[in-house]
Image 1: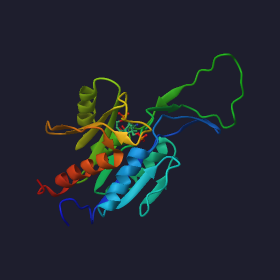
Image 2: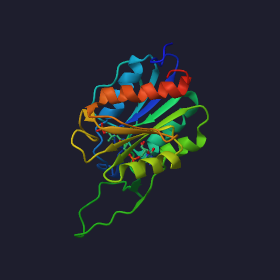
Image 3: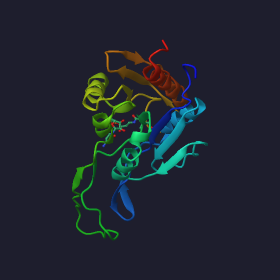
Amino acid sequence: AGCSELAGYRVLITAGGTREPIDPVRYISNRSSGKMGYALAREALRRGAEVILVTTPTGLPLPEGAEVVHVESADEMYEAVMSRFDAVDVVVKAAAVADYRPAAPAEQKMKKQADRLFLELVRTPDILAELGRRKERQVLVGFAAETNDLETYALDKLRRKNVDLMVANDVTQTGAGFGVDTNIVTIFDGRGGKETLKLMAKEEVASRIFDRVIQILSNSCD
Ligand code: PMT
């Protein structure tokens, strides 16, 4: 395989925003459309990888050739990712995972009651941080969605979660982050390296990310 190829590698990608149930008909979620994750899946397939796409419901067409695992909540995503981690070489966590979920989802549809409703939330597992603790040979790529102090927070997450690459997007910039077909990212590696990319299609961002992943995997493609 050449230095742009991923043939023979297994790549797991997470996509979309998790849904945390409040009751059988309601949930807490976020603005992730899944587009970044699906673009990563298509690019990894194009480069010959075996791709597992762990996705929340997005309504996007499923990438042809990927093994697709459907999940909704952060807990379900945690199970889906952890149970497959030993069998993969690369994990890219483009999903926007809720940090909190309702403590005790109601079993029946909740009825209107008082003027105010207090919902108790508890922390979800941090999937990426757990992967960082367990990782042996795998290359781990995280995303950081920030609205301020991008570099500080992204580097903090890179170190805390023990990832190889952190892709940071300032989601307040036009054409970046949630919902759109383009992104503006800065890629940090664990050795002080920093590359800021201009506005480009999510497909192209995905390609730049895999160029770097391949460098880390093969260590001979400079
Ligand atoms: O889906 P799109 O509409 O295309 O939008 C793309 C995107 C903005 C969602 C994407 O580019 C992005 O930034 N994804 C990560 C969003 C996010 O949740 O960032 P975070 O800074 O909260 O989390 C940091 C990293 O830890 C992420 O890789 C996340 O997947 C992971 N994480 C977070 C919390 C948690 N409980 N478990 C995790 O694994």
